[in-house]
Image (cartoon, rainbow, N blue to C red; front, top):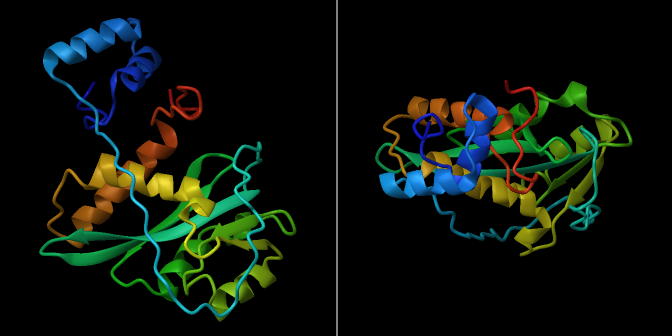
Length: 228
């Protein structure tokens, strides 16, 4: 089963995963002993913070204000960001994604070779018909894509609420930053992707896994619903 999850689980997540999908049940102590005997270790995440200075045009207040402990419904709070990845001989790719904080799922994503407005446009066009007028809040950093004229029009057209992190405070978008760390540790850093298509396939496969099968410690050692 370790191969099924690509070696990313420690004994706690592996215990939950096994008991969820297998008929035979085991406690965490037994799983720990077996994994230790076989030399199976999970991926260890490393903290990483980043901030890119820029001159924003359309700035929104930090409406969300780190209120991450509240219980939100689907599409009430959407977190978004773009991160850089590499493939081949140091070629760059950029992944834009939207995290539904109420559902704890990535509901839109797009991988491209340029970090530009078009990448964010294609990402948000995927979910435009799912937004809730006057209810959906979209939170981002102050990247130029989110302070652009196009994004301002998108927010106004769909009558949604825009929120932005303060300069230099990655923690204001903490769950989104956390997802990037998880994705890079579990899917990206341990592998080499020769082509853009190889990287894209891996990202698509991992996000589908993250949304449907990944055990979440922050959700109380639970697997997303409707996975059996």
